Amino acid sequence: MRDLADLLDARTRRPDAIAAAAAGRRRPKSLFGPHGRMMIIAADHPARGALRAGADALAMANRAELLDRIRTALARPGVNGVLGTPDILEDLLLLGAMDDKVVIGSMNRGGLAGTAFEMDDRFTAYDADSIAAAGYEGGKMLLRIDPDDPGTVSTLESCGTAVSALAARRRMAMVEPFISHRVDGRVRNDLTAEAMIRATTVAAGLGATSAYTWLKVPVVRDMDRVMAATTLPALILGGEVADDADAAYTRWGRALQLPTVQGLVIGRSLLYPPSGTVADAVDRAVELL
Image (cartoon, rainbow, N blue to C red; front, side, top):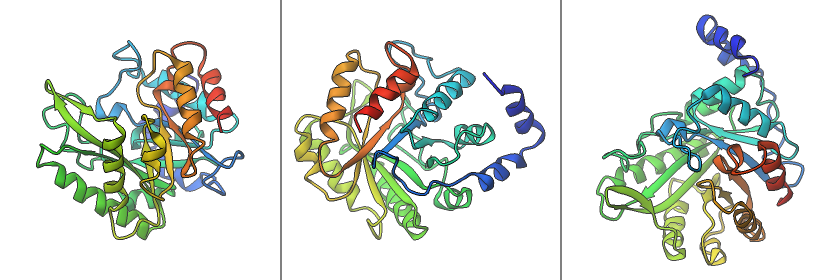
């Protein structure tokens, strides 16, 4: 990776450089890009132990390669933001890759993929104070609601507290809601329209105010019904790397026609496209906006 030696030197000998880089970052003038929408690159998967992209179970395990892919995506015209955990965002700060970008800090990463405690999604990364102190534009939280798991209520409470705390600091609270179940020991998200409507309405009501709440949602069938369930602005997530990339782009494009949908938050599908380059995949997504 380019600049790896400088990055390692800063982390090893000059840890204060991270705070200095955050203080010196040029903040974006708006949440929206030149297309009037948001185009955010998501890169918070590794902190949950989710390293798979397509058929490669460890695709995201090489941090230098991942950072190069993220930097390539952030440099493309029309990309105006990034979502990540502290380790990744701080690498990007030290590499000078986040000027003029909307930066969203990922907050609850305790529900590690494939564990017995996956639904216990505790806040183990950013909190509202650290997001505000770094000058970031918002925080993102995952809200998986398992009707059979009493532990879900603690995640609901924690997300509600985080929404209120972010709003008090006038920072975006990006909530990613799902109805989830354990199937053969693995957590599966219910991607029916009915389940997403229920999850969306629960998420929209969290916190003391919804003034700064945005939703991060997948594309499902009858997406117009899902988005009609709330007036909150929404961003479309990419999810797993699709076998049929053309179909994925088509779904994203259709969802972007709905009035509350304000942009895309895509990670693995663009950073590890099934064919072509990162730049090609990102440019094609930007064209949808």
